[in-house]
Image (cartoon, rainbow, N blue to C red; front, side, top):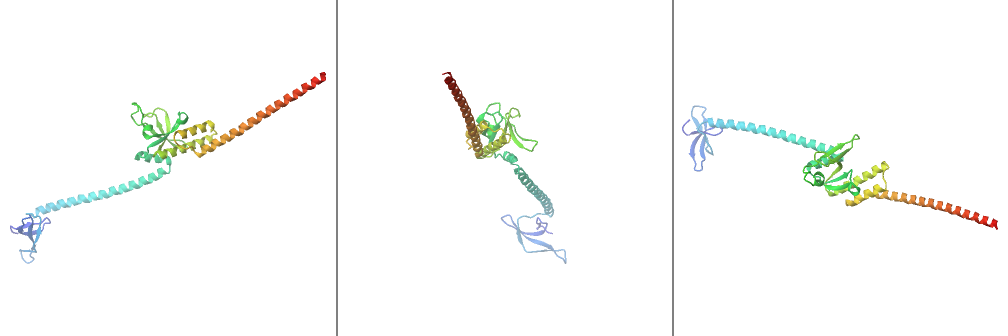
Length: 282
């Protein structure tokens, strides 16, 4: 080795031939001679960096190895994270598929993702046309006065028959009267939901034999107030009641006519008897 001996970052010994103005170096590789202790030089080439001893390249080589090991570990960790994300995505898709099989549970997804904008609210204590109505999310979940600054309690209840129903309380702490709530994605969805709820009420009232003219007027007023066309089923049931009332009215009128006819015949018979009595007197 001589004073011009330098080392590359790989540890290769080279002979410095010239330092260029741009900071690079012209060097020739040094190789051991198999026949003596002299070193042989190879073809010159240009490098950007040289080291005075081979200790620095070894240090950098060790650091590079450590960094490469850390990079490999990070890449392995990244692969594991990607696999976990992929698995989580599959589980989420499976869960959403199961949730969507139960229509009311789909509202959970809409609520989490902030998709719903309206509610159809059925107030148990509402009057006439106001007992079932369409409201915006803010109207339902937040109050209009200074005592109702917090979101109201929205709860999913389950029954013994497996029925599920959303309820919203009057206040954020869960107190106050409860109203049945049907979350909707957009106004059109709310109108369709209101029509569906009306049909469910009609079916239930018919099943329990509670549907009457007052209920039909109440349901019709509700649909009209919310700008929703009354379900065809409601018109059919209203026509049935009208026909029943017509038949009943005819029967009652026929009965009254029969009674009046009977009374008339009695009066005519009584009048005839009185005329006969008068003739006997003469």
